[in-house]
Length: 210
Length: 247
Image (cartoon, rainbow over all chains, first blue to last red; front, side, top):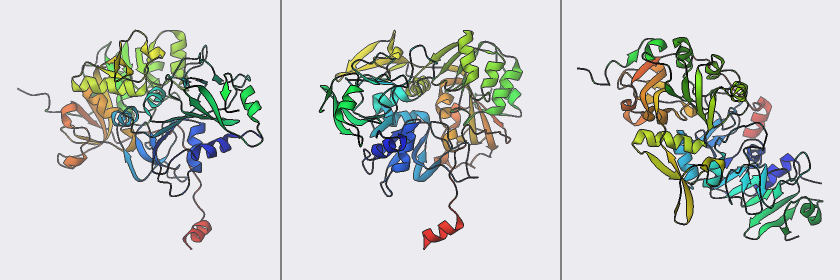
């Protein structure tokens, strides 16, 4: 059985070292926060200006001036701080963020990341994606293995507009955990009940370790 | 003879915008609708100024905030980082009326920081090998490629403050700060819309986040809508649950 969104988020939470600074992208990556172990000392960074982001506020306590990068109301955890955007991107671009967990439209076998525009599609904008992809120390991508049309998102050469070149370290999909190595994609782990051959068949480039 | 730092307090948003002309380049603080100088945004529409260049992260959303400028058709060019579900901006882009430049967010703010700090250009790793690099100088430092990006200036910056004093010292509130203190440094005239105007000395020196040298006009506006974009909450633990938890 492939992993559902919750299972992908739970598996991604295992990738987060205790005591690290982590930026969670919009959408599926945001759900990883629900699976962090108690007392794990993870400092969540949101590029609009919080280090030490807490959970959603209790009903009736939301402040429209305390939001995450997805413009959802959040809280500031004990020990958290608020700052301006230049400071926030100093953290990102300067390599002070240990891990960024991002979504993807395509990942190339060389680690190229495309996650901001589909050719011919509606332009959504870049936001913080290019800075996070270029600046975070480690890039973990969470995505479905195939597009809605059934095409592989893991490809030999990404041909969507790139976010950054050669930056992706690891990918967690509904089918598997895959590393990007100097030799291309390498299978690390399959979702329960998924065979290595099924993962290789759904991948648009050679997959080592099958 | 008066220096630039006397008589900064203005009575109304319209008075604070005095001198605004057609074709002005205006930075507006805010991350989406969070931290908008709402009264100044409305007053720009009322001023009748047109053909503006808007420099702002989102250019409004959900028909609110800076979307009013798009609806009033007073913007000719936009520099922003994200469009998202801003239907007014999508329509303006589709109509081809407005020239929209989309910039990576860290580059966007660093270009303004550079402008305010007297640095004409800088190299950044962000955008190398992407459409953002088109037409830009690429240079290698320590075996890695970087793009040359230029400073971004404006005639005006409109920013929201939590507290400001008559010199223009500012303290912000939570994530309403975002681009505001950086934009303030990059504009010829910075106008602060403060929730509270407080006397000199009321903000502790260590709590002044934006020093008054970067601020030229201050107007107090205590009524703000502060609309939610996405009000996300979690259920409060029940009294019974809380009692169990404390046992």
